[in-house]
Length: 88
Image (cartoon, rainbow, N blue to C red; front, side, top):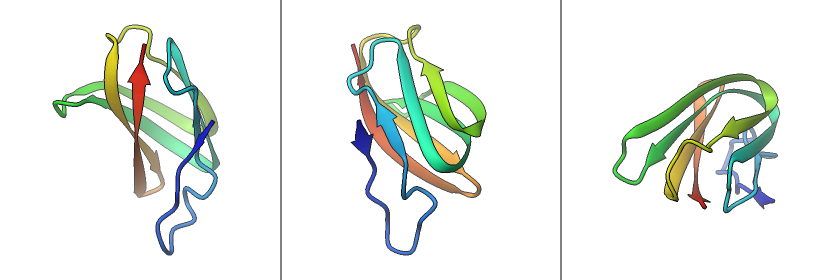
């Protein structure tokens, strides 16, 4: 389980967790506040997945993506947090 470090003054992502990393098929994301969506980008900056969530937890299906490294941008209200994952 990975936990994201919060930035000064921002408690929106104080409890954001994602696992497993590396991921095979499903990436689980949890947060204390409601997640509105998650967007996945490849390292060339191309959006490869956009999923509306509207919940405190979600499983994102990454089984259709090739092996590689991706950036996941999580949206909570009008704020975002980005983290890197590896797909196996």
